[in-house]
Amino acid sequence: MRHTQREEQIYTARWAGDPDAVGLTEGVLLRWFTPDMLHRLRLRSSTRDLLLAHAAQTQGSMGVRPPAPRQPHLPAPLVGPGLRRAVPSDAAELTRLRLVMLASAGTVPEPQWSADCERWFADRLTGDGRFAAFVVDDGTCLLSCAVGQYTDPMPSPGQGPNVGHIASVATDPAHRRQGHARRVVTAVHDWLTAHGCGYISLTASPAAEALYRSLGYRDHAGPTPLAWSAR
Image (cartoon, rainbow, N blue to C red; front, top):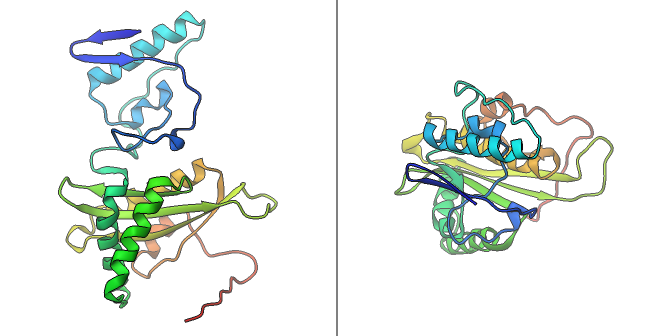
């Protein structure tokens, strides 16, 4: 079925698969949306009206009343110009931004490290469904990035089935103080919670602590976390 208005078209089909399991050959992000979520997307008004009209016709034929559209002054979207999910071809830029982050902490890896890191990113962006990176892209390079991973640990009371971790949050020095880090961290956080993460950890630098606390992250409660390292 196809509905046409001006030069915009909608193609409809039925599918109940997992968007994160799809190997996209075009585009970078696939998500499910209901009509009442359209206010979160940056769409042309004509496109939004077309989608709402299509939803009203489809749901109306099924005896379902479509939800009333929200006003555009409500919260800004997570996915908009510049913000997207990373793809394998971003591996080199993700490595560059990770080097920026390490340099800010006084760490300078050996030369071979960059090639190993780039290969690591490419491998996970290609086929690891428990890994995602979100980036701000200005069309020439990546301005900011954040990485998320999750695991399914032993069950804990009051905790979701998965545990997430946010890492490699970095913004190019020339583009800081513009809200890019907040956008990528929020996108990764929402991706992790959408995948059942009831607990998400991260390591906050002094410069980024205020950002994380403003997003709801707080001091760890419970037993003191300890770690062992060979270095």
